Length: 305
Image (tube, rainbow, N blue to C red; front, side, top):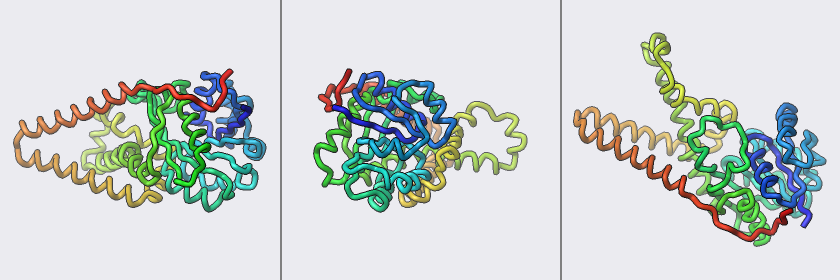
């Protein structure tokens, strides 16, 4: 089966999709697109696409499947750009944040005969604590889950394509509602970044920050490093677009800080220690379950060499 797949956005996720498909020997005509010339040139070094280009029209016109891996603030403009070229019955596979919001943009800007499915990835447990969040890997999705979200009127064949692609790049398909995924992403992806921003704001506004900054080391650097993601991915817009969920998790974070304050004010070190130990046990339990995720074999519609 001669299927043409175009990946738009050649950052870690987009390149990892290309690497995984190349490694598995999928019989797909693979095209990589990035409007950033530096990223376009860097992607050529991986040699996983039949063509890497900055020309959007040529890459979209013949694509049966289009993978989108872009920061949220670039997605709407990208839909506007390629709406005139996208072919009938093309399947749009969205790998980035806030899929419910982005579905609304797709419905507004793209032709009716284009199918939108959100594929929200998790990553291979072996990379969970890896400080390098930029380097792509062929096994980035191995032993992980990808949440597949779509409207109920999507044809079964289209859902099968999304499911098979998920399996082909090494992940386990997991179906979830679009609204549900927005909420889950807010808790586990955006809240840590919000927390990093709040922590840095508190620290720099401490009266002794000028002197304390000389003492600050890896603890503060590690706890606030997610601020880099906020700048790169324009998280400010994402928080505003996701206002209800953002405000909810911020309120819950305030409640958690208040609980800690209550333990401290009570002066009961044993109860406070037990509370902290219970949180550590929950963290280890979560990591243990993620590390034990196992793939399931699944028949795929894509051919292999």
